Every structure is written in structure tokens, then in C-alpha cells.
Image 1 (cartoon, rainbow, N blue to C red):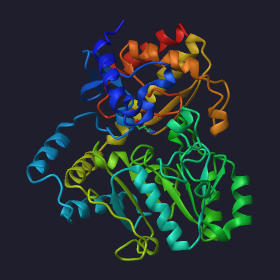
Image 2: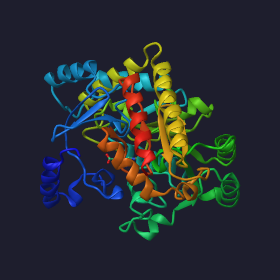
Image 3: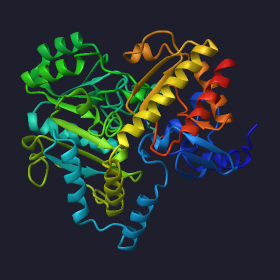
Image 4: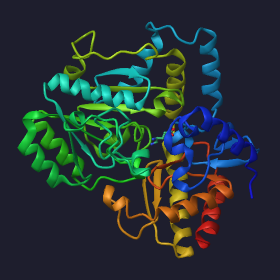
Length: 428
Ligand code: HOZ
């Protein structure tokens, strides 16, 4: 058994001061009937806890550490930037440089605004879509999680699904009324609602691959048809690529599936592990953002020099040759191993992967939306999670979160993880 004394003591102390002892719900390990380990440091593919245990990490800060933890170039760049000051609340050339990189890699965006998190990106994008169209309603899909803004916590994924509160108390009914939810991949329902209500619908927002109920892939033509019907009715199509950006492909799911959304939300990776989000899109839409246009959105820490530096350095590393071949090689290695381990151990699972994000569901049914994701046996998942942790492999502590691969994972890390999975699955 791993030592956990220090983590347990720290968790107890944290609970006296912080709700649930954590600053974001899923990381409390409640969904897997356990308590969290407290981190002392992380490097490359590994994360280390205060009790001296090390883990091969597939959480990667929920996605952004695509180069691996504490990448030397990113660390060096942040150190140098910090010496010049940590925040100015005034423009810097770094913001333009990161914006230029993003617009080159995501050509659907002609302009982009930096914010501090994915939540800020999606809530701002929706406000802009509403301001631009003069319409109030939005369409979102069940299980898609777009951060915790009011009106988006309706049938939401991530912690909201994990803890069984997809509709959070505290969200006024009047807000939620403007959010129409549809099952993911249900194009018939989307068509029906758009046909009936398009005059009042500002935008359709979705995670093109749903990372917040595991890893749910779009059915063929789902995204294309959404694109066609939204275009026809002047509805702004927003791709929330906070998870899928730089993960499904360098150019995100929009590049992979060949769809040009009107607006895109990014986060995680573009801050190289520091708090950043961004939203951008068509020039006519983005021109409505203040001070160019009337839609207000602001932030002192937006475009923060440390975050911009970490983002630029990370993206420049990702732009190097063969990066995505390596990510694909690592990810398919893990996929083959995990699928094989489950088969050999006689445990029924469904495995899904989009680029370097993935999920093993403990179900024998195909997973294509929220309802089918919920067929997964969460108790079995919890046993799997704990077994893996005990063997030094860190997965997200919920059946309804994606796993992530990094460039720092070695073949030996992956083989060890597959072996750990087989040993754990055998005993489930
Ligand atoms: N909801 C986040 C992932 N989908 C988890 C954030 C965190 O706990 O850091």
C-alpha cells in the first residue's frame, strides 16, 4: 500500500478552510470514494505527491501539459518573463504574438481576445453571439460542459455529471430558460428546434468531441449538418475547443473534421499550464467586442505576460516537426494496450480516442451521448481508478473525464501503464 499519511493530513486541514478541501470539485476524489493525494511537484510524464509517491500522469492538469510537466523551455521562458514583471494591465507585444499564432493555426478565427480561463472564454463568446445576433436563446448539448457560468450549467458534463447535479442550484430559472438542450449527436432534434425557434436562437455551442463526459465522438455528418443549419438561419456556431484544441489535432477538432465554426473557444494548452483562455471568430462578429464594438468584456489579468509567454513557448514547441506523429504513436500505443488488457482480463469496456484524448468506459454499450455514457458502471471505474493509482498510474478521478497523453510519455511509461491496467482489470 502506498503511503498517504501526509496527503490525508493536508486534506483534513484544507477541508477546514476550503469547501470540500479543493478549489475545483472533481479533484476531491469523491466520485471514486477516496481522498486526493496532494502534489509536491511534477516533471515530464510524472507527478509526485507529498508522501513521496510518483505516478505516470494521464490527467496532465486536465489537458494543458501536452509537452509534459515543467518542460525546460517553458520553465526558462516563464522565469525570464517574471524578471520583467508579472502583470501590467496594459498591452504587450506578447499578446499580439500569441494571437498571431492562434489565428494561423485556427484560420476560422480572424480575431481573438485573450481571457483567463475556458469558462471566461465560453461565457464571453455567448455574450458576443447574443449581442451580434440580437437574439437571447442558446442551444447546448447534454453532457457538454462549457465552464460554470450561469446558463451553461444546464445538463452539463464534468463535475456536474460526476456529482449528479447537471443543473446547479443557484442558477436562476430565468437564465436556464434561455438554454435549450439537445442530446449530443441527435441531429434530428437539432434540426427540429432550429426550424421552429431560429428567430430567437443566438448560437449553438458544443464541444465537437465531448471531453467532459469522457470522450464522445461526433457521428459522421453530425457536425456538418449543424454547420449547414446554423449558417442557413444566421445562428452563430461556437466550437468549444478548450479541451479538443491542440489535442484532437494541432488545429483542433475543426481541422480534423473539416468544419469552420463562426466562433471558437480555446483554453488549457494555449497557456502552457498557466491560466489562459481565448475566444475568437469571424471578423464581423468579433468586431462587436468592446472597445471596437458595443459588447462589453474585460479583465485586468487578460493577456498576462507570464501566461502569454508560456503559451507562445508551448505552441512553438508543438509546431516542431513530427510532434503530432509522436503524440499519435504514444496515444495509439496506449489505446491498443488498454483495449487488449480489457479483452484479456474479460472486462467489458468501450474505448474512445480523439488524437491525444481518450476514455475507457466500463460499459458494453456504444457511447455516443450523455445517456449512453451514463450506462458506465461507475463503481467498477472507481475500483479500476484506485487499482491504477496504487500501481503508480494517475487517471482522472471520474468516469466522466477524459485522459490525456503528452510528448513526455515514454514507451516504457506506456507499457507500465498497460501492465498496471491488466493487473487491475483482472481483479475487478
Ligand atoms: N472540470 C475540469 C475538467 N473537465 C476539472 C478541473 C479541475 O479540477 O482542475
